[in-house]
Amino acid sequence: MSRRTGAGLAVVAGAVLLAACTSATGGHGRTIPSGSAVTSSAAPPSSAPASTAHPASCTHYAVPDPRRPHMTVRFTIAADHRTVQGTERVVFHPDRPITELVFRLTGNTRPTVDEGNKIVVTSATATPGGGAPRYGTANAAASTQGGLLRIPLSPRVPADGTVTASIGFVVTLGADSFDRFGRSGPYAYFGSAQPLLAWERGFGWHTEDMANFPAESATSEAMDVDLTVVAPAADTVIMSGDPADPPRTGAATRTWHATISAARDVSVAAGPFAVSDTVVDGVRLRLGAFDAATRDALVPEFQRAIRELGTRFGPFPFPSLSVARLPASGGGIEYPSSILMLDGSRLVAVHETAHQYFYAMVGDSQALHAWLDEAFATYAEELVNHDQRDDGALQAPGRVDSTTASYGQDIAGYYFTTYNKGGAALLAARQAAGPAKWDAALRCYVARNAWRIVNPDDFARAMRSFPAGLAVLRQAGALN
Ligand SMILES: [Zn+2]
Image (cartoon, rainbow, N blue to C red):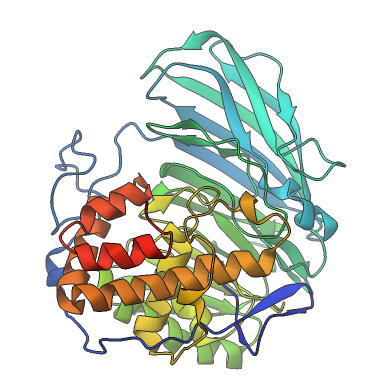
């Protein structure tokens, strides 16, 4: 998620506008990586070694775990855009024994519900051995079922066993909310709308509280995704996976269908978009906006972001990027191979595109270690946009590696420490280490940790050759 540049911190129309992160960017030389040798494994070739989830290679992205979950999800958007009927089927192979399944109900986050959104689970079963569903509060809005859906399993499912869940749900979309969910004029949009399997390999279930402000707080594995969206026939759908538009047949609805080989989540937007389809460095870029002029101004910004970030971090992680520029105010919200954009700035374009590397491909716990995607997206902004910044963030108190919940209601503190201070710490570490060598090591970190969920120790290990850089990050409380 991003916040657009503003003078100081202000709340406008429900959106938080954060002061630009303005520290010197240090090295301005573009380092061209040996990126051309890196191949995306978003669609790994059939010859890819199935057991090498993260081989020790800097020249190829690690392949997704062959035992990753498979999610089939179908959304049917009502003609009036006020509700979305959903069905979801998840086939899951846990890497340790489990006695329940846990799904996160992001739509029931308190500020999200305050804006008229919610999710109601209407059915939830699991085989083998699934019992009646239960709900955990997890700081969700009191008026809802809760923040966590739990399906008990008896007997337990052994490590590497298989369990299949089938869930029905209804999402309500509020008007003009700055969030993952909403309606704005003739547009509807939603992300993290389906119950999200809350598992991390090597960790277990993530049951952290929902945040008190509209920041991300989920953790989810990269999954094989089969995504279907049924929308009113007059709409165009902009969604993860960038499927071709179905023909208009005179029926009341049209159906879009995409498969994505490694996605932690999905987003969908529907409405009368003015659409551009271009190809940038082999990446299909679909950009839909609420008018043609806005579309035409944004297309080159995303083309630039894809090129510049590809140069810095490696080839774009997905075969496509779908951007929905909505007529609402706010920032942007990142999803795998898709972006919901509520702000038309260059800053947001680069920030959210950078999240395709940090969050979508190199995953993290957005509740426990949010800086592992937000500080990196902020860092990428500044490297690419050469913002001139001096906001004192690096000297400000507060540990960069703090949980989202630890900020309580302090949304400004969360953004300042996680984004500004975290981004500034990464820039300062790069300067201390030497930009060229640091950049090369960072590309290795990205390649080796593709499609995983990382922890701060993974980053420290990847950068262990740079004691001066690590000292900067420790001083900032990003690392222990
Ligand atoms: Zn962000």
